[in-house]
Image (cartoon, rainbow, N blue to C red):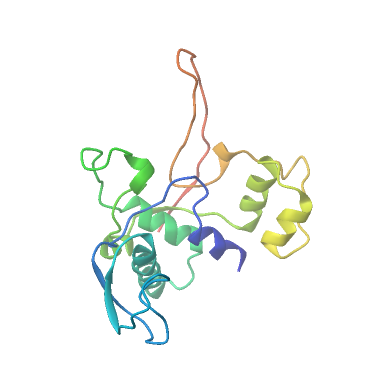
Length: 184
């Protein structure tokens, strides 16, 4: 559905979270080769990277969903983000642009205390405010959404468990972020 697409794809140009993804023993069909250039066929291989982190993060989301079947994808993402284990930029020069809120902690995410929830209209407002065309929004949402003054939102007002702000060096900036939390 529409909202699950936003659970999978980060709204920003950085990840929401990080998950195990280094030296994972992975299995796949012997019908495919090890790589495009290596035509050997194996049953298992050690692989690393975001393609290995994705199943772990998806499993963590499914785990949280098993405890809270009525939670939206946005609430699940919020629970995972707000309970993540903080990481340090000492190990990653990209800082939070490389790991987002931190390393997933599925056990803690089942009882986050507060969540930032969002529904389809919240994302439509966000997309309208970002200048997406009605045709593009309809492709994403699968319904006849439209942009108007009421649905023209800003990135600052999306009920999302993080904040992002860009600035110009030497220029003072003030921004108000609106968020609503739900006690779960």
